[in-house]
Every structure is written in C-alpha cells, then in structure tokens.
Amino acid sequence: MKRIALLTIILAIFTASNLLAQQFEVTPSKMMFQIEPGNSGTAYITVINKSNTKRSYIIETSDWTVDQSGKIEYVDIFPKRTCQEWMNITPAFFDLGPNETEKIAINMNVPDTALATKWAMLFVREAIEQTSAMAADKELKTGITISPSIAVYVFQTPQSNNAINATVQNLSKYEAAEDTTQKVQAMVTNSCDRILECKVFLEIVDLQTAEEISVEAVEALVLPGVTKPFIITLPDGLAAGSYDITALLDYGNDAELVATQMLLEIE
Image (cartoon, rainbow, N blue to C red; front, side, top):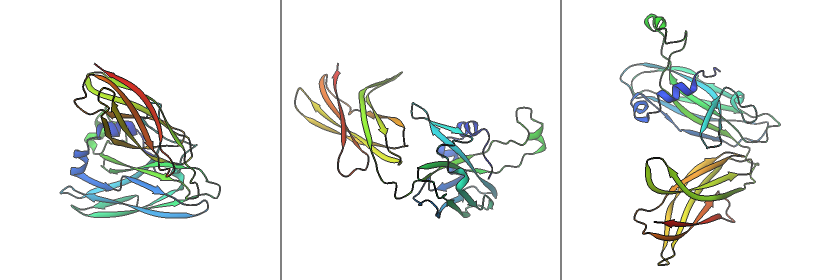
C-alpha cells in the first residue's frame, strides 16, 4: 500500500465538495470496524465515476491525529493509534467508465494483542498520468501530480472494549473575529478508549421571565484521550439581560447525562 505524500496540499486544493461530486463519489465517508483481537473482517466502500469520460482511480492510506484545537493533522504514521498496516484493499487501482461503479473491499486483520481503538484514513483519488508538459513544469516535483481526492475515515475498536466515559467542562462565551453571532463553547473530553459519538445541547433559562429555551444539539466524534471544542450558536433575538445556560453532554451512556453551567449577560 502506498502512503500519500503532500496530503495537506492535496486536501487544501480539493476541499470543495461540489467539485468532487461532479467528478466522482465515494460512500460511506466513515467505516467503523468492531473486530475482536486475532480476527478479521471486511467492509466495503463504493466509488462512482460521475464524469463523462473514463477515469482511473487509486486507493491510498494515511494516518491522522487531532491537535489541541480539534483540527485534524495528517501524518505519515501515528504509531500509538494506527491500523494502517492491518488493512488490505482490493482493488487498490481500477478504471471506471462514465457512471460506472466499483465496490472496494477493505479487509481488516486485527493482531491478537490489539485491544485498543485504532484508526487510519483512506484516500480515493484520480490517478492522473503525468504528461511530458507537466514533467517539464518546474513547479511540479517529478512523479507527483495533484489530483482530486476524497477521504474516508477508518476506525477499529474491539466490540468487547465497551467501557465509556466523557466529561463536558468550561462552558464560556465564544467570540470570533468578524462574527457577531452569539455563541458559546463547551469542551468535551473523551476519557475512555472508545471513539464516542457526542451530542452537546443547551438549555437556556431567561432569568428575567423564567422562560426555558432549548437549542438543537451539536454532534461530533471525539477520539480517545482528546478534548474537543463544541461551538453552539444561541437563538436569534435573545433580549438584553441575564441567562442561565446549561450544556448537556450525551455520549451514549444510557445511565446519565453530564452537564456544565454558566451565567451569560447579553447587553
């Protein structure tokens, strides 16, 4: 399996989903394996050529982690959490005519001692042959051609690894340059070894009128050991005054929700 070079450049140039959708589609965008140590399993992604010409595609892999602000960082290898070397991809290179579809098998072989959650990234991209004109362009490195790419997240957690725990803290007013929308931010920490699908929603009490206001949940995956900011927009038209705001975290634990509170003054 080839590892990707210049991942950051590729993604920076081709993050426009509309552009990619015009050329090809990949589903699903996320693969969740739950294989016990010493076993293997297979899941599939589907690639559709949406263009009007024959195209070639290649599947590549990479590792990734998350920085302190919650943003993804792509790395060649992330030893503590990688499952990159456990995957076999069939086929890893293929051609598709207009509107043709290819089903790609991702086989995950989990070692006997692999009890922890691991992850990696698949990239499906067009394999564009470098022409002589392109090779002569000094702006391009030999053998490297930037082409559209779509990412697929891959997660592996043994099904028996089922203890979960998370906290929500530090609810505060969120301010960003040139953004006049009222927002708050809560920090969610995943303190277990499973990937958690977290939902944070607000309950607001207007202390002038005792009116209760609910705000739709913000949802995101939080990786093991990661603290992720959840930024939530407050309802339009809140009158000046004092508000008691509670952020409630639902992380999949049927027994409890966890919460944090703040007093917000709106002028």
